[in-house]
Amino acid sequence: MEVPSLSRQAWSVIAALILAAGAGSRFAGKQHKLLSPLRGTRVIDHTIAAVQRAIADGAPIARILVVTGAVDLAPLPSEVSVVANPQWNEGQATSLQAGIRAAEAIGADAVVVGLGDQPFVSPDAWRAVAESHATIAVATYPGASTRTPALIRREAWPHLPKTGDFGARHLISSRPELVEEVPCSGTPADIDTLEDLESWNP
Image (cartoon, rainbow, N blue to C red):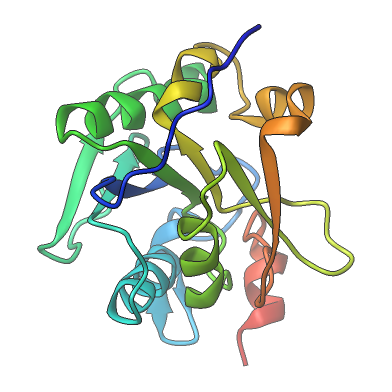
């Protein structure tokens, strides 16, 4: 599989792509996990706010795209573009592809992909990954195997999975020479279960 290199241009358009379409079937709360309150704010709003703060701090992110499916996440900030994925129940790859199509439509040259249920990824992490000049860049955290958010440039998009319940992991693992690891602050801990949520709430 050949992924060509691409010179980096100052005018590159980068979109933050937040995947938030899944059913969250492991979560036994009264509502969808992304709508559940975490320290007084919905889980999804923490994730979006981190991207907004990164942009305010100078991150080269031009747009925020949120892929939805299983649940309506409204209200969302006016600057957020909602991307509906009617195939959300067929796996995360369909949400990634829906987001990539939306990024193509706005002329983006790269996406920084994060997950809606990772509310503690810091603004600094979003900014550091977005500032990478690599074809693919992944966040790394001490003692954690999770590598999101991840920057994926346009030349790598054709090699992303179109089916299945996974995102860019195979591409990242199969082409390590294209990947820059970016040490990041914060934690990639996700909210999968009600117990996860309760452990973070005071």
